[in-house]
Length: 285
Image (cartoon, rainbow, N blue to C red; front, side):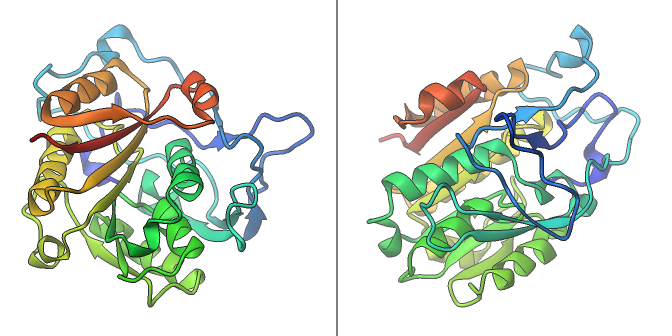
């Protein structure tokens, strides 16, 4: 998921790309094509200037949408290029992702997407071909495209994000030869769902690293509620990285709104040390 640069203020620092820290493996070079080191699949942060206590406080416990601060353009962190990810053999053929930050931070790979994609491939491969799948805040489409790459879907899935990411989603769909399996659509959080999305009635909703910008929290919450209202038996597979206390307030609010269950995964002891959380969210009865 990306947000327009006009929404970003100087204190809303986005974290830079992650690099693998396994000994004798190097960070991918800035080239047109590269293979992403996999190892345990967990990435570590480069350093950023530490925000002050004032900066780390949320605008309000109620997810305030106060945006009356000076505006700043979205920073650029690395050159555009293409990566291949095979998830340690879980994919017979690696998924290819073009990364491009010109449209925002959604144009690159983030750890929560790696964790969620690997979990779906490892634990849900038998049921996924028969599922109606929608990815929220897809960015370049890592999670959804990995799923589509692994199995022939009976019903084409949807990658969704803001308009700025539409071109990248289409590009990566075609890059993987999945034009007949995956559709890209604009879905702005907080806005009414299109009739196409309502009628689709997704039963498997994927959301990775959608929690990173506090003013968008109530919009994300509304969209998740709307999707579950359209398909009451659906499950949202939700993975995020805790970067600040506001992220945990979102989780607390989600637990009040949905039936939330932390998901067991054999990699959980590893990714939990990196501040990554994996939950299944369902509509409360």
